[in-house]
Amino acid sequence: MKARQAFVALLTAGVVGSTVWLVFFSPVLGVRSVEIVGNLTVPADQIKKQAGVAELHPLATVDLGEVEGRVLAIRQLASARVERAWPSTLKIQVVERKPVAVVPVGDKAALIDRGGVVTEVRASAPPELPVLRVDRPGPGDPATVAAIKVIGGLPEELLMKIDEVRATSPEGISFRLTNGRTVVWGGADRGEDKARVLEALLPRTAKVYDVSSPDVVSMK
Image 1 (cartoon, rainbow, N blue to C red):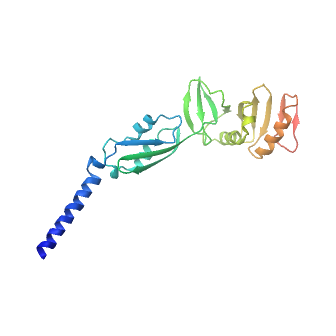
Image 2: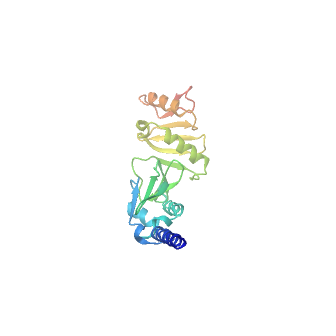
Image 3: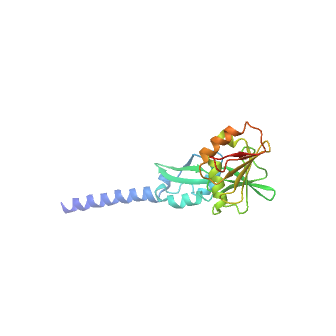
């Protein structure tokens, strides 16, 4: 009886040992494919390379947090989530940063997202994005933050009419429209009211539209 129990114990230990080896050390359950989900402009091959997971590396021992950190080094990405998809796939789901404005940097164009983070630098500015002019562009600059908040809250139809946004301070935001006219916007408060009033005023001929106080507007 004891011999039989010992045999069963050894057999069980052998099975457990084989399973541990199979899962944690063997290439049998290793990474054979990396699936990228959510990327629109960042190439999947770039994300896979940045993930840095070797083919046939045991899927169970992949450090998901480390992979996420490496992937997020790609500045066009706002977030990344890495999961195991057994038996042999590593799934990386990403969300890209969406540029909302362009900041001139020398003869280059820096695209920035809603957080003021530079997503990429291009040789020329995309025509669909407004140019943002501030003294100290960056996610920690109050004027930049206020201007981006205003841009992000504008109706699409109105945004398409804006060529340039200038912010001398958080309360000193103004627009230059594509037809050369100027809009004095003021601060980031009451954006919906200002946009509604401005759209009603634009059919009227003027060089300057002041909607900084949407209850008392003026045109020049």
